[in-house]
Image (tube, rainbow, N blue to C red; front, side, top):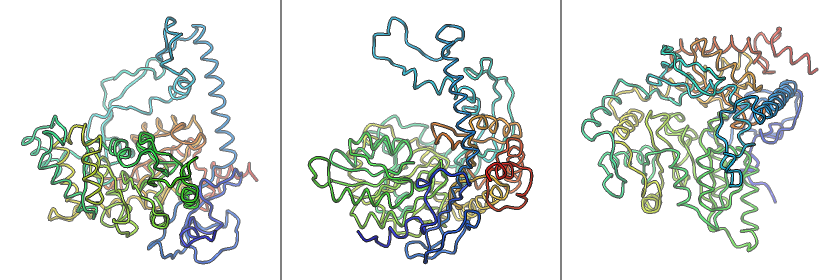
Length: 566
């Protein structure tokens, strides 16, 4: 079949491969995605590849550059060796626990219940017992302040190697928060939003204690829904009290048996759960790979349903605006082109992109300058950029009217809290410039500047950074399991709060630290965090990047890896 214009543009020219198409290599191959290649370029050595390219395309109105640098071979080998050693010692410790030489703190079945169906799968808990527990102190740290640009942490210690924790009574003051999704800085306890939420609490109370269909439908909820529809540029919208349930409880109302769901392989758990609960057939395409998506669409049209070969009742494509673990942005113009070509429906999750992308802060649709009507179901959450809770779905009026009757979140869930509703209304009006001030636009510009500055500095330092240049989610690759815990602890010693992520949330050799840039961060805060990151990077030898950068010819990890792989 002849390739159409959309598939030709897919992931740049033949030189720029997608992340999923990568092959194991030891040369530190650098992958850079740029979708506007007007002419075929000759193959060049990885060291000669440009990170940016001049771009022009009918589908895109601006350059679209994403970077996923290949894991160096030596680092990959050492990472596998590290997990192998941990696994061997894990089995040894399990042997000691079975023979009562070591106490096991996890829940286990009683001997009298051994003939019953097991509640706890012992092998599934292996990772938790022997790997996660070693670095558990990097998570679940209690916060005793507003999680703004800075926060206060409750100090805790463990007497039994991270099985349990005790508070010391001390508080770590003014820790720079580089982990919260507070993109626009609206998570605050003072200012217009906080004052409006406080007044709303006095008038309406803290809760509703009923569903929207019974006694829990407030005028504030209807005001918010009209505002969200106007903000998104759609006919109608509906809000829900929980972001996770917005996906997991509404997708089953939209698809069912005889329908096909095409899901990006890196979609959030809420999307995955919703697709599974729907009873639809699910097929997964490679992350942001339009060739993989088009092949599934073409096969679905040609072959139809299994066995009967009847046409699918509905084909629904599930994608996210910003992928929170990769920092990548969906190739929405190409997805829409394929959706129109094959007459499918598009479900766009803008949990991380709404408020954080676009010149007007209206998400990935605004970022690409597209028509909102091209997206059938627009979903997002208020938990990130708006500093609140809950989620929304926007689209045509017929769609929203249908969901009001068939969505489990609408029929059975308690309505959104009034002060939370007011927080969203006030922050959204601020972004839209309807508060007679320019604060919203200033924060949008500040977030963009902070994102560009933070990513550029990390690249210059020699770290491997994933994702799109405009994404405020910045993954910094750690790779080795021992460095996951070490990085989080060393950063906290320097008064920087970070989020570290490892297997099984990421591929086994792609553990990372995930930074979230906020408009509330000042340049001084970012410089302080960057200096600490560079210092810890030198201490743990994390500067793996092989890209051309100032001062790369030294005795750092870059040069070490270079000498061992040549």
